[in-house]
Amino acid sequence: MNVLVVGGGGREHAICWKLAQSPKVSTLYCAPGNAGIAQLAQCVDIAATDVEAMVIWAREHAIDFVVVAPDDPLALGMVDAMEAAGLRAFGPRKNAAIIEASKAFSKELMAKYHIPTAKYRTFTDEAQALDYIDAQGAPIVVKADGLALGKGVIVAATVEEAKQAVRDMMEGGRFGASGSTVVIEECMTGPEVTVLAFADGKTVKPMISSQDHKRAFDGNLGPNTGGMGAFCPSPNYTPDIAQRCMEEIFRPTMAAMQAEGRPFKGVIYFGLMLTEEGPKVVEYNARFGDPETQPLLSMLETDLMEIFQACVDGTLDELEIRWKEGAACCLVLASGGYPLSYEKGHVIYGLEEVPQWATVFHAGTRKKDGAFVTAGGRVLGVTAVGTDLKDAVAKAYEAAKPIHWKDMHYRRDIGQVWVD
Ligand code: AMP
Ligand code: GLY
Image 1 (cartoon, rainbow, N blue to C red):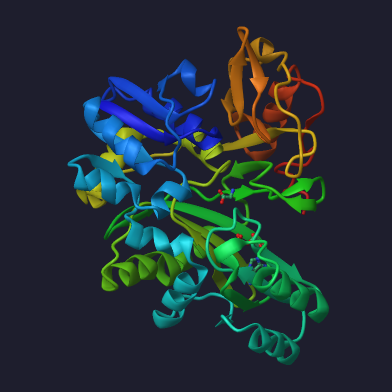
Image 2 (cartoon, helix red, strand yellow):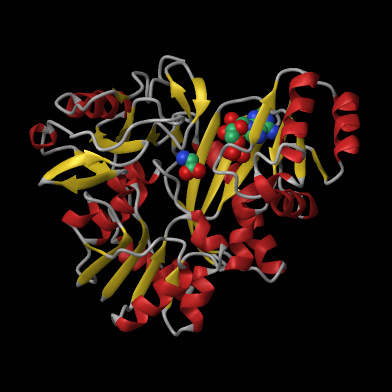
Protein backbone atom coordinates (compact mmCIF):
# COMPACT_ATOMS: atom_id res chain seq x y z
CA MET A 1 0.00 0.00 0.00
CA ASN A 2 1.03 3.58 -0.64
CA VAL A 3 0.49 5.41 2.64
CA LEU A 4 0.55 9.16 3.31
CA VAL A 5 0.95 10.47 6.88
CA VAL A 6 -0.09 14.10 7.37
CA GLY A 7 1.94 16.13 9.90
CA GLY A 8 5.57 16.80 10.70
CA GLY A 9 6.37 16.45 14.41
CA GLY A 10 7.59 13.81 16.82
CA ARG A 11 4.19 12.15 16.82
CA GLU A 12 4.27 11.75 13.05
CA HIS A 13 7.83 10.44 13.20
CA ALA A 14 6.68 7.75 15.63
CA ILE A 15 3.69 6.88 13.41
CA CYS A 16 5.96 6.63 10.34
CA TRP A 17 8.52 4.58 12.31
CA LYS A 18 5.85 2.05 13.28
CA LEU A 19 4.19 1.98 9.83
CA ALA A 20 7.57 1.44 8.17
CA GLN A 21 7.76 -1.88 10.06
CA SER A 22 4.50 -3.09 8.51
CA PRO A 23 4.69 -5.58 5.62
CA LYS A 24 1.45 -4.01 4.35
CA VAL A 25 3.14 -0.65 3.66
CA SER A 26 5.15 -0.51 0.44
CA THR A 27 5.76 3.22 0.02
CA LEU A 28 5.49 5.72 2.85
CA TYR A 29 5.06 9.47 2.36
CA CYS A 30 4.80 12.22 4.96
CA ALA A 31 3.61 15.80 4.44
CA PRO A 32 5.34 17.98 5.40
CA GLY A 33 7.50 15.63 7.53
CA ASN A 34 10.87 16.66 8.96
CA ALA A 35 14.53 15.64 8.63
CA GLY A 36 14.13 12.61 10.90
CA ILE A 37 11.02 11.39 9.11
CA ALA A 38 12.91 11.75 5.81
CA GLN A 39 15.04 8.78 6.89
CA LEU A 40 11.95 6.54 6.72
CA ALA A 41 9.51 8.21 4.34
CA GLN A 42 9.48 10.46 1.32
CA CYS A 43 8.65 13.94 2.58
CA VAL A 44 6.19 16.04 0.57
CA ASP A 45 6.32 19.80 0.85
CA ILE A 46 2.65 20.52 1.59
CA ALA A 47 1.48 22.19 4.81
CA ALA A 48 -0.56 19.87 7.06
CA THR A 49 -3.45 22.36 6.95
CA ASP A 50 -3.60 22.68 3.16
CA VAL A 51 -6.57 20.37 2.66
CA GLU A 52 -7.08 21.04 -1.02
CA ALA A 53 -3.44 20.58 -2.05
CA MET A 54 -3.18 17.42 0.10
CA VAL A 55 -6.20 15.81 -1.57
CA ILE A 56 -4.96 16.65 -5.07
CA TRP A 57 -1.47 15.33 -4.29
CA ALA A 58 -2.83 12.11 -2.75
CA ARG A 59 -5.00 11.41 -5.80
CA GLU A 60 -2.20 12.13 -8.24
CA HIS A 61 0.17 9.78 -6.39
CA ALA A 62 -2.18 6.80 -6.12
CA ILE A 63 -2.27 6.90 -2.32
CA ASP A 64 -4.20 3.96 -0.88
CA PHE A 65 -4.44 5.18 2.69
CA VAL A 66 -4.06 8.56 4.41
CA VAL A 67 -3.36 9.05 8.14
CA VAL A 68 -4.33 12.51 9.37
CA ALA A 69 -2.48 13.03 12.65
CA PRO A 70 -2.67 16.71 13.79
CA ASP A 71 -5.74 18.48 15.22
CA ASP A 72 -5.94 21.37 12.75
CA PRO A 73 -6.47 19.40 9.52
CA LEU A 74 -8.93 17.12 11.36
CA ALA A 75 -10.94 20.14 12.53
CA LEU A 76 -10.80 21.52 8.98
CA GLY A 77 -12.35 18.32 7.63
CA MET A 78 -9.38 16.75 5.84
CA VAL A 79 -10.73 13.24 6.40
CA ASP A 80 -14.10 14.24 4.86
CA ALA A 81 -12.29 15.81 1.90
CA MET A 82 -10.19 12.67 1.33
CA GLU A 83 -13.27 10.47 1.51
CA ALA A 84 -15.14 12.72 -0.90
CA ALA A 85 -12.24 12.22 -3.32
CA GLY A 86 -12.56 8.43 -2.97
CA LEU A 87 -9.54 7.98 -0.65
CA ARG A 88 -9.39 5.91 2.53
CA ALA A 89 -8.41 8.05 5.49
CA PHE A 90 -7.74 7.37 9.18
CA GLY A 91 -8.98 9.99 11.62
CA PRO A 92 -12.31 11.45 12.72
CA ARG A 93 -14.48 13.37 10.29
CA LYS A 94 -15.03 17.05 11.00
CA ASN A 95 -18.33 16.42 12.79
CA ALA A 96 -16.53 14.09 15.25
CA ALA A 97 -13.24 16.04 15.52
CA ILE A 98 -15.39 18.76 17.12
CA ILE A 99 -15.03 16.80 20.38
CA GLU A 100 -11.58 18.44 20.60
CA ALA A 101 -12.18 21.55 18.50
CA SER A 102 -15.00 22.85 20.72
CA LYS A 103 -14.85 22.57 24.49
CA ALA A 104 -18.44 23.86 24.64
CA PHE A 105 -19.53 20.91 22.47
CA SER A 106 -17.64 18.33 24.53
CA LYS A 107 -18.93 19.69 27.83
CA GLU A 108 -22.53 19.60 26.56
CA LEU A 109 -22.03 16.06 25.30
CA MET A 110 -20.78 14.91 28.70
CA ALA A 111 -23.65 16.64 30.53
CA LYS A 112 -26.28 15.15 28.18
CA TYR A 113 -24.91 11.60 28.44
CA HIS A 114 -23.88 11.70 32.13
CA ILE A 115 -20.16 11.25 31.49
CA PRO A 116 -18.27 12.36 34.61
CA THR A 117 -16.48 15.70 34.24
CA ALA A 118 -16.05 18.96 36.14
CA LYS A 119 -19.23 21.04 36.61
CA TYR A 120 -19.22 23.92 34.16
CA ARG A 121 -21.04 26.79 32.49
CA THR A 122 -20.51 28.31 29.07
CA PHE A 123 -20.58 32.07 28.55
CA THR A 124 -20.62 34.39 25.55
CA ASP A 125 -21.36 37.42 27.76
CA GLU A 126 -18.45 38.79 29.75
CA ALA A 127 -20.45 40.40 32.60
CA GLN A 128 -22.31 37.15 33.25
CA ALA A 129 -19.01 35.23 33.26
CA LEU A 130 -17.53 37.62 35.84
CA ASP A 131 -20.63 37.37 38.07
CA TYR A 132 -20.47 33.58 37.92
CA ILE A 133 -16.85 33.63 39.07
CA ASP A 134 -17.80 35.86 42.02
CA ALA A 135 -20.57 33.45 42.94
CA GLN A 136 -18.42 30.31 42.66
CA GLY A 137 -15.17 31.56 44.22
CA ALA A 138 -11.67 30.17 43.63
CA PRO A 139 -9.89 27.97 42.71
CA ILE A 140 -11.69 27.87 39.38
CA VAL A 141 -10.78 27.03 35.80
CA VAL A 142 -11.31 29.30 32.77
CA LYS A 143 -11.06 27.85 29.24
CA ALA A 144 -11.26 29.45 25.83
CA ASP A 145 -13.52 27.54 23.46
CA GLY A 146 -11.87 26.20 20.34
CA LEU A 147 -8.31 25.23 19.59
CA ALA A 148 -5.96 27.58 21.38
CA LEU A 149 -2.83 25.43 21.02
CA GLY A 150 -3.10 24.12 24.58
CA LYS A 151 -2.69 27.61 25.97
CA GLY A 152 -6.38 28.40 26.40
CA VAL A 153 -6.71 26.96 29.92
CA ILE A 154 -6.15 28.99 33.08
CA VAL A 155 -6.33 27.19 36.42
CA ALA A 156 -6.93 30.29 38.58
CA ALA A 157 -6.01 30.25 42.27
CA THR A 158 -7.91 33.47 42.98
CA VAL A 159 -11.15 35.12 41.83
CA GLU A 160 -9.18 38.07 40.46
CA GLU A 161 -6.92 35.82 38.39
CA ALA A 162 -9.97 34.05 36.94
CA LYS A 163 -11.65 37.34 36.09
CA GLN A 164 -8.52 38.61 34.41
CA ALA A 165 -8.39 35.42 32.31
CA VAL A 166 -11.98 36.02 31.17
CA ARG A 167 -11.19 39.65 30.29
CA ASP A 168 -8.07 38.61 28.37
CA MET A 169 -9.97 36.00 26.40
CA MET A 170 -13.11 38.01 25.71
CA GLU A 171 -11.65 41.49 25.26
CA GLY A 172 -7.97 41.13 24.55
CA GLY A 173 -8.43 38.94 21.50
CA ARG A 174 -5.47 36.85 22.66
CA PHE A 175 -7.20 33.73 21.44
CA GLY A 176 -8.95 35.23 18.41
CA ALA A 177 -12.30 33.59 17.67
CA SER A 178 -11.40 30.83 20.17
CA GLY A 179 -11.96 33.27 23.05
CA SER A 180 -15.41 34.60 22.19
CA THR A 181 -16.97 31.73 24.15
CA VAL A 182 -15.49 30.80 27.52
CA VAL A 183 -16.12 27.71 29.60
CA ILE A 184 -15.83 28.13 33.37
CA GLU A 185 -15.29 24.94 35.31
CA GLU A 186 -15.07 23.60 38.82
CA CYS A 187 -11.41 22.90 39.72
CA MET A 188 -10.81 19.16 40.11
CA THR A 189 -7.92 17.65 42.05
CA GLY A 190 -6.15 14.32 41.78
CA PRO A 191 -3.53 12.60 39.64
CA GLU A 192 -3.85 13.13 35.90
CA VAL A 193 -3.70 10.20 33.51
CA THR A 194 -4.10 10.05 29.77
CA VAL A 195 -5.65 7.17 27.89
CA LEU A 196 -5.53 7.12 24.11
CA ALA A 197 -7.85 4.67 22.41
CA PHE A 198 -8.39 3.34 18.93
CA ALA A 199 -11.97 3.74 17.75
CA ASP A 200 -13.92 2.52 14.73
CA GLY A 201 -17.18 4.35 15.26
CA LYS A 202 -18.62 1.66 17.54
CA THR A 203 -15.83 -0.20 19.32
CA VAL A 204 -13.21 1.49 21.50
CA LYS A 205 -9.90 -0.22 22.35
CA PRO A 206 -7.81 1.67 24.90
CA MET A 207 -4.04 1.70 24.54
CA ILE A 208 -1.95 1.38 27.70
CA SER A 209 -2.22 4.48 29.91
CA SER A 210 0.26 7.34 29.68
CA GLN A 211 1.22 10.65 31.24
CA ASP A 212 2.87 13.72 29.81
CA HIS A 213 4.60 16.69 31.45
CA LYS A 214 3.15 19.93 30.15
CA ARG A 215 5.18 22.55 32.05
CA ALA A 216 8.52 23.77 30.71
CA PHE A 217 10.60 23.36 33.88
CA ASP A 218 11.34 20.78 36.57
CA GLY A 219 8.80 20.44 39.37
CA ASN A 220 5.96 21.37 36.99
CA LEU A 221 6.98 25.02 36.96
CA GLY A 222 7.02 27.54 34.14
CA PRO A 223 4.74 28.00 31.16
CA ASN A 224 2.64 25.28 29.52
CA THR A 225 4.23 23.59 26.51
CA GLY A 226 3.08 21.00 24.02
CA GLY A 227 4.70 18.43 26.35
CA MET A 228 8.27 18.05 27.62
CA GLY A 229 8.20 14.29 27.93
CA ALA A 230 5.87 11.36 28.46
CA PHE A 231 5.86 7.82 29.73
CA CYS A 232 3.63 4.76 29.73
CA PRO A 233 1.98 3.03 31.44
CA SER A 234 0.97 5.27 34.36
CA PRO A 235 1.37 3.62 37.80
CA ASN A 236 -1.77 5.51 38.92
CA TYR A 237 -3.96 3.70 36.42
CA THR A 238 -4.89 0.47 38.22
CA PRO A 239 -7.01 -2.32 36.66
CA ASP A 240 -9.98 -1.20 38.81
CA ILE A 241 -9.73 2.36 37.55
CA ALA A 242 -9.31 1.08 33.98
CA GLN A 243 -12.55 -0.87 34.30
CA ARG A 244 -14.42 2.12 35.70
CA CYS A 245 -13.10 4.32 32.89
CA MET A 246 -14.23 1.79 30.30
CA GLU A 247 -17.73 1.58 31.78
CA GLU A 248 -18.25 5.18 32.84
CA ILE A 249 -16.28 7.14 30.23
CA PHE A 250 -14.89 5.33 27.15
CA ARG A 251 -17.92 3.29 26.06
CA PRO A 252 -20.45 6.00 26.98
CA THR A 253 -18.46 8.55 24.95
CA MET A 254 -18.45 6.30 21.88
CA ALA A 255 -22.18 5.63 22.30
CA ALA A 256 -22.88 9.34 22.77
CA MET A 257 -21.05 10.28 19.58
CA GLN A 258 -22.90 7.56 17.68
CA ALA A 259 -26.25 8.70 19.07
CA GLU A 260 -25.46 12.25 17.98
CA GLY A 261 -24.80 11.06 14.41
CA ARG A 262 -21.06 11.75 14.82
CA PRO A 263 -19.47 8.29 15.05
CA PHE A 264 -15.85 8.63 16.15
CA LYS A 265 -13.22 6.84 14.05
CA GLY A 266 -9.54 7.34 14.71
CA VAL A 267 -7.70 7.90 17.96
CA ILE A 268 -9.62 9.45 20.82
CA TYR A 269 -7.56 10.95 23.63
CA PHE A 270 -9.06 10.93 27.11
CA GLY A 271 -7.37 13.40 29.47
CA LEU A 272 -8.52 12.12 32.86
CA MET A 273 -8.32 13.23 36.47
CA LEU A 274 -8.55 10.54 39.14
CA THR A 275 -10.58 12.46 41.73
CA GLU A 276 -11.83 11.19 45.08
CA GLU A 277 -15.24 10.72 43.49
CA GLY A 278 -13.80 8.63 40.66
CA PRO A 279 -12.25 9.22 37.25
CA LYS A 280 -13.46 12.35 35.41
CA VAL A 281 -12.75 13.76 31.96
CA VAL A 282 -10.51 16.85 31.84
CA GLU A 283 -10.48 17.02 28.07
CA TYR A 284 -10.93 15.05 24.89
CA ASN A 285 -8.60 15.24 21.94
CA ALA A 286 -9.46 13.81 18.54
CA ARG A 287 -5.99 12.47 17.74
CA PHE A 288 -2.78 10.89 18.99
CA GLY A 289 -1.06 12.98 21.70
CA ASP A 290 2.40 14.40 21.22
CA PRO A 291 4.71 13.24 22.86
CA GLU A 292 2.56 10.40 24.32
CA THR A 293 2.58 8.65 20.93
CA GLN A 294 6.38 8.20 20.99
CA PRO A 295 6.48 5.93 24.10
CA LEU A 296 3.10 4.32 23.28
CA LEU A 297 4.03 3.17 19.78
CA SER A 298 7.38 1.99 21.17
CA MET A 299 5.35 -0.42 23.33
CA LEU A 300 2.94 -1.56 20.59
CA GLU A 301 3.50 -5.05 19.22
CA THR A 302 0.59 -5.27 16.78
CA ASP A 303 0.98 -3.98 13.21
CA LEU A 304 -0.21 -0.35 13.32
CA MET A 305 -1.39 -0.48 9.69
CA GLU A 306 -3.66 -3.38 10.57
CA ILE A 307 -5.15 -1.37 13.43
CA PHE A 308 -5.68 1.71 11.22
CA GLN A 309 -7.46 -0.42 8.62
CA ALA A 310 -9.69 -2.01 11.26
CA CYS A 311 -10.65 1.46 12.54
CA VAL A 312 -11.63 2.60 9.06
CA ASP A 313 -13.42 -0.68 8.20
CA GLY A 314 -15.31 -0.89 11.49
CA THR A 315 -13.77 -4.25 12.43
CA LEU A 316 -11.82 -3.25 15.53
CA ASP A 317 -13.82 -5.72 17.67
CA GLU A 318 -12.17 -8.59 15.76
CA LEU A 319 -8.61 -7.42 16.33
CA GLU A 320 -6.46 -8.28 19.33
CA ILE A 321 -4.03 -5.45 20.12
CA ARG A 322 -0.87 -6.55 21.91
CA TRP A 323 1.56 -4.49 24.00
CA LYS A 324 5.06 -5.15 25.30
CA GLU A 325 5.67 -5.82 28.98
CA GLY A 326 7.50 -3.09 30.89
CA ALA A 327 7.39 0.65 30.29
CA ALA A 328 8.61 3.35 27.91
CA CYS A 329 9.77 6.92 28.38
CA CYS A 330 10.22 9.79 25.92
CA LEU A 331 12.43 12.69 26.96
CA VAL A 332 11.90 15.85 24.87
CA LEU A 333 15.00 17.88 24.05
CA ALA A 334 13.84 21.43 23.33
CA SER A 335 15.30 24.72 22.14
CA GLY A 336 16.34 27.10 24.94
CA GLY A 337 13.50 29.59 25.51
CA TYR A 338 10.71 27.27 24.30
CA PRO A 339 7.69 27.73 24.53
CA LEU A 340 8.38 31.46 24.32
CA SER A 341 10.96 32.78 21.88
CA TYR A 342 13.82 30.55 20.80
CA GLU A 343 16.45 30.34 18.09
CA LYS A 344 16.49 27.87 15.22
CA GLY A 345 19.23 26.59 12.96
CA HIS A 346 21.68 25.29 15.59
CA VAL A 347 23.68 22.21 14.58
CA ILE A 348 22.70 19.11 16.59
CA TYR A 349 25.73 17.10 17.78
CA GLY A 350 26.04 13.55 19.04
CA LEU A 351 23.13 11.83 17.29
CA GLU A 352 25.40 9.11 15.90
CA GLU A 353 26.54 8.22 19.44
CA VAL A 354 23.04 7.45 20.73
CA PRO A 355 22.88 3.74 21.67
CA GLN A 356 21.03 1.41 19.28
CA TRP A 357 18.46 0.36 21.90
CA ALA A 358 16.98 3.89 22.03
CA THR A 359 14.94 5.64 19.34
CA VAL A 360 15.33 9.34 18.64
CA PHE A 361 12.13 10.78 17.18
CA HIS A 362 12.56 14.13 15.45
CA ALA A 363 10.01 16.84 16.31
CA GLY A 364 11.59 19.96 14.80
CA THR A 365 14.69 19.36 12.69
CA ARG A 366 15.89 19.96 9.17
CA LYS A 367 19.02 19.14 7.20
CA LYS A 368 21.49 21.92 6.38
CA ASP A 369 24.78 21.22 4.59
CA GLY A 370 24.45 17.54 5.45
CA ALA A 371 23.93 18.13 9.19
CA PHE A 372 20.78 18.01 11.32
CA VAL A 373 19.88 21.46 12.65
CA THR A 374 17.14 22.63 15.03
CA ALA A 375 13.96 23.87 13.35
CA GLY A 376 11.37 24.10 16.14
CA GLY A 377 10.70 24.47 19.87
CA ARG A 378 10.54 20.76 20.56
CA VAL A 379 13.45 19.30 18.62
CA LEU A 380 13.94 15.62 19.54
CA GLY A 381 12.17 12.96 21.60
CA VAL A 382 14.66 10.42 22.94
CA THR A 383 12.64 7.29 23.65
CA ALA A 384 13.54 4.07 25.44
CA VAL A 385 11.75 0.93 26.56
CA GLY A 386 12.67 -0.64 29.90
CA THR A 387 11.67 -3.47 32.22
CA ASP A 388 9.75 -0.98 34.36
CA LEU A 389 9.21 2.79 34.50
CA LYS A 390 12.35 3.50 36.50
CA ASP A 391 14.45 1.51 34.02
CA ALA A 392 12.81 3.18 30.99
CA VAL A 393 13.42 6.64 32.44
CA ALA A 394 17.06 5.86 33.26
CA LYS A 395 17.58 4.53 29.74
CA ALA A 396 16.02 7.58 28.05
CA TYR A 397 18.32 9.91 30.02
CA GLU A 398 21.33 7.68 29.34
CA ALA A 399 20.57 7.63 25.60
CA ALA A 400 20.20 11.43 25.46
CA LYS A 401 23.63 12.05 27.04
CA PRO A 402 25.67 12.44 23.83
CA ILE A 403 23.18 14.88 22.23
CA HIS A 404 23.74 18.62 22.51
CA TRP A 405 23.37 21.92 20.71
CA LYS A 406 23.54 25.58 21.67
CA ASP A 407 21.01 26.39 24.43
CA MET A 408 19.45 22.90 24.43
CA HIS A 409 16.91 22.55 27.24
CA TYR A 410 15.23 19.52 28.82
CA ARG A 411 13.57 18.57 32.07
CA ARG A 412 15.49 16.44 34.56
CA ASP A 413 12.38 14.93 36.16
CA ILE A 414 10.45 13.21 33.37
CA GLY A 415 8.72 10.11 34.68
CA GLN A 416 9.70 10.73 38.31
CA VAL A 417 6.38 9.59 39.71
CA TRP A 418 7.37 6.45 41.58
CA VAL A 419 8.75 8.65 44.38
CA ASP A 420 5.35 10.39 44.85
P1 AMP B 1 -6.42 21.11 28.77
O1 AMP B 1 -5.80 22.04 27.75
O2 AMP B 1 -7.90 21.07 28.77
O3 AMP B 1 -5.73 19.77 28.75
O4 AMP B 1 -6.00 21.67 30.19
C1 AMP B 1 -4.66 21.83 30.53
C2 AMP B 1 -4.46 21.43 31.95
O5 AMP B 1 -5.25 22.26 32.81
C3 AMP B 1 -4.91 20.02 32.27
O6 AMP B 1 -3.94 19.07 31.96
C4 AMP B 1 -5.16 20.11 33.76
O7 AMP B 1 -3.93 20.01 34.46
C5 AMP B 1 -5.66 21.51 33.93
N1 AMP B 1 -7.13 21.53 34.02
C6 AMP B 1 -8.01 21.65 33.01
N2 AMP B 1 -9.28 21.60 33.47
C7 AMP B 1 -9.21 21.44 34.81
C8 AMP B 1 -10.17 21.35 35.87
N3 AMP B 1 -11.49 21.42 35.64
N4 AMP B 1 -9.72 21.21 37.13
C9 AMP B 1 -8.39 21.18 37.39
N5 AMP B 1 -7.43 21.27 36.44
C10 AMP B 1 -7.83 21.41 35.17
N1 GLY C 1 0.62 16.11 24.93
C1 GLY C 1 -0.68 16.66 24.92
C2 GLY C 1 -1.36 16.65 23.63
O1 GLY C 1 -0.92 16.11 22.64
O2 GLY C 1 -2.43 17.23 23.56
